[in-house]
Amino acid sequence: VKAAVVRSFSDAPRFDDFPAPTVRNEDELLVDVIAAGLHPRVRSQAAGSHYTSTDKLPLVPGVDGVGRDTDGQLRYFVLTDTTMGSMAERTVIDRRRSVVLSPSSDPIAVAAGMNPAMSSWIALRKRIDFAVGLNVLVLGATGNAGRMAIEVAKLLGAGQIIGAGRDAGRLSELAGLGATSTVSFDGSTSDQIRAATSEVDVVLDYLWGEPAATAMAALITGRADEGRPLTWIQIGSVAGPTAPIPSAALRAARLQIVGSGQGSVSGREIVAELPTLAEHISSGRFHIGVRSMPLADVELAWREAAATRQRIVLTP
Ligand SMILES: NC(=O)c1ccc[n+]([C@@H]2O[C@H](COP(=O)([O-])OP(=O)(O)OC[C@H]3O[C@@H](n4cnc5c(N)ncnc54)[C@H](OP(=O)(O)O)[C@@H]3O)[C@@H](O)[C@H]2O)c1
Image (tube, rainbow, N blue to C red):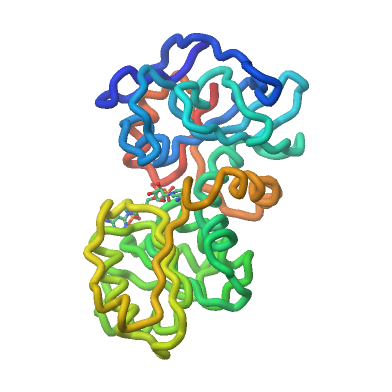
């Protein structure tokens, strides 16, 4: 089959031939891939740097997608660690890790939106007991996952929804998605950050690194009520894989740090959340910035992915 093929972790995938996938048991299904998202997770997979990476090569990247099975049904699927990913004309999926989509759903939107939306959906529904009215701060709210986190928090009934980031233009778009306020971590003083976040209950952190540590120090020293629990959910690390967390943060407030991702949430729990989320996306509940490109242009897509704001979706 034609596919995006990674032969070296130091080069972008190339459009090339790859051995045709075969079904090995009755849970597996062959699908014609319609759309596969080029998520940050897929870029790290192709670079051999994701925490779940094995170092097997060659590989076809792609961790999820939308395809049509041999019965003609449209399915959103998630793949487990495999060298036969979704960026191919055909791939093999496990039917238990897929959901049948309504024929009217938009495969491009679903392929673009499920991965970024899932990050906050799973975090709020599976890693904490989220209650309606809790105040949420999204740290790194200008990326695809961060923007959708604003909409997910709104959908789940959050009280205050505060978007924090560094790009003023993108921050200004968040009110339209449901943010009750925004705060710039570049343009604001510590006092302003403290004032804006003094009643936060839950942080959805896409950044980690230095910015997360700085934000944590501000939040801890700015609590309106020190006894009010603060749960910090670590989700992404676009600003750095490690963060210099101040020890006092853990003593001076009722701070809990947890993470949400593959491993801290089981595959079964993740799969159980897919149908509802797929329905929200299919029904147009979220704003999804997407740019679709032919699979044959995968090399160009890899170059563009670093620069473009919209989620790239490859279509075989
Ligand atoms: N754990 C999970 O379940 C899960 C699921 C999906 C995604 N993720 C992770 O979530 C993260 C974000 O994913 P995404 O899909 O939203 O990626 P994305 O669309 O590429 O957005 C990344 C955003 O990060 C911001 N950023 C980058 N470096 C920054 C820095 N030093 N300080 C502040 N902001 C910075 C950029 O904002 P500006 O340039 O606008 O400032 C950019 O918009 C990734 O690490 C991804 O792997 C985790």
